[in-house]
Every structure is written in structure tokens, then in C-alpha cells.
Amino acid sequence: MPAEGIAIVAGRGDLPRLIAEDCARRGLPYRVVLLGDLTLDWADAHPAIHGQFEKPGRLFADLRAAGCGQVTFAGGIVRPKLRPLGFDLTMLRLAPRVVRGLAAGDDSTLRMVAGIFEAEGFRVRAPHEILTDLLAPPSVLGRVQPSDADRRDAARAAVIVAALGAVDVGQGAVVAGGICLGLESIQGTDVMLDFVARTAGPVRPAGARGVLYKAAKPGQDRRMDLPAIGPGTLERAAAAGLAGVAVEAGGVMILNRAAAVAAADAAGLFLWVREA
Image (cartoon, rainbow, N blue to C red; front, side):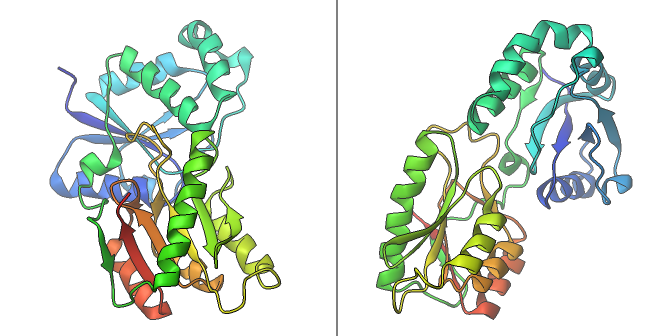
């Protein structure tokens, strides 16, 4: 049986901090793992392990020494630019597999990473297994209800997102009056919403505001890279002139849910957890 400690492989965003704070609050053994040159201003308040992408053997040894037999991946991590001269023996053994994985889409890459950790005896856990309030049941959260037109736009966006996910590209789209105003790619949701805010005016159908829809990719390994939204997503959706945000029930994490609902209410947007 794996050791009980949880290694939080941290990326950017609020999610790794929320998990670390929850582990500290509950008295669970954990370590925040910072890879490469990543620095996070909140991490100094938590026990941490610093690792290099080129030296996974050292990282695995450090995790075992710290009693971490479980690992969760949280936050946005930029694909590393590997330096072959820095490879340790473990990376030399893994290099062909890693190089192939990094050349694939995000889900394929993360499946590769999960497989490597599992082969080393670590149990890979989803963030929402640790922070159990991240997934909301199907419902409209907050005061604002989506209109019939909004529901049609969400349905259209769901079809688009499923098509994007089938080729392992993105997890979100913006649709207004049936017209797609923006697609999420590797740059992420915030960049897409900023793009819509800058460019949608001339092409937005008359009277239509639009909906941001996010969902997991079809067949995605839901332990890793499950899409997430938070208060900032609602604020950017408002800046883009949208009517609201819809997310797939069971497929999208809502960070700081109370604050996200408050942001939606303050901006007059709906926040809808939609049945898949």
C-alpha cells in the first residue's frame, strides 16, 4: 500500500494552494512539489520539494523519503524544454517515452506522466478526490437563470467543445446566437475570453450576448487536467459581454465556489452546472 503522504505537483492558479491549505487544515501529510524554475508566492508557507524535469529519479527518491505515496497534479504547468545534458539515469531510461508524450496533445501527455508515476509505485489522485467540494451537482448557482436562447447557445457550445476535445485541443468555447466567437486552445480560458472581449463586437449577432461553456474532453483521464473555473472566469466573462457561464456537471471544477457565485451575481451573469 502506498504511503499516505500527498505530493501536490503544483502549477499556476489557485488550485494547488487550495489543496495545500486543505491538507494543512486537516493535518494530512503532504508536500508541495515545485518543478523547474517555478516559484509561487504562497508556497513558502508549506513544506516543499524542489525538482527538475530532467531528474525524475531524484524527485521519486525525495518523495519516498518524505513519505509521499500519493500524487495529485494541480494548476497550469507549461510544457518543459528538456536539457538532455542534465538527464539522470531514470530520465535516460524514460526519454523515448517522454519525448513522444510531449509531442502529443495535453491529455496524452498527462496520461504519459501519470503512467510514469504509477509505474514507480505512486497512486495518482484527482484534485477533486481531495477537495471534495470542487464538483457541483447539476443546478443553476446564484440568482440569475439562463434564458432559452442561452440554453441553446450552451448546447451548441457543448457540441463544439466535444469536437475540440476529440482531437485533444481544448475544453471551452464561447457561442452567441449560435455563432462561435471563441475557442480555447493551449493558451487557456482567460486568453480566449480576452480575445472575445476585444473582437466579438462586429460579429456578435444582434441581441445575443453569449455563453462560455467548459467541459472535460471525451475519454479524458479525469484524475488530471480537469477544467476549472473560478471568480476570475466570471469577471472575464462579464468583461466579454456574456450572459453567463455553463459547465459540464461532473467534468469541471469550480474553485472558490462561494466567491464564484458572488461574482456571477454581482455581474448579473448566470452560473449553470449543466447535465452532460
